Picture 1 (cartoon, one colour):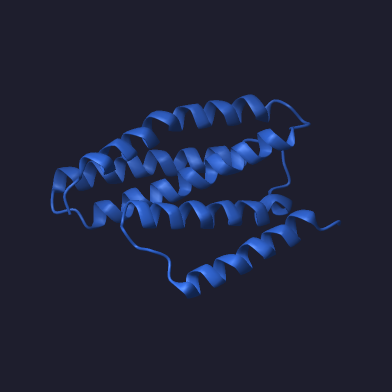
Picture 2 (spheres, one colour):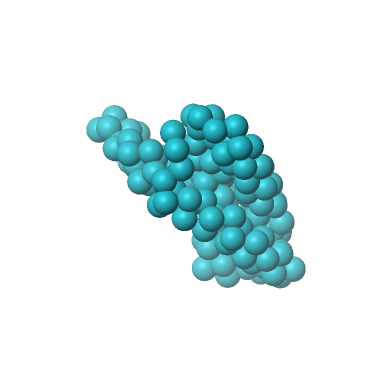
Length: 144
């Protein structure tokens, strides 16, 4: 698999904006009472970083060029580190937010799979995704 122009632009976007995601998580982590908007933005950023890092690993595994593999694996390592930082830096109870995060990750991963790898979600994936979304709502709104 060769790196097309649109894929290269996507990977450049992930690498360039990864720094912004980390800065946002650092800024928010210094505040004990995060707003809902900040929480949602950080969870979306984390989902994009995790799914994007996974996409880079997948593309690297299927690349015919050793140089492209090394570059994609290196970029994936940096992006997945940024994901870990983004998820763990804020002062939140991630267990309570896990339902919302799983929903974001599922949606972002399916979009990347569709847009980059041209794999349209099957009806069973869409049914399972509906269950994930409903489960995420239940976990996020549950009173403990």
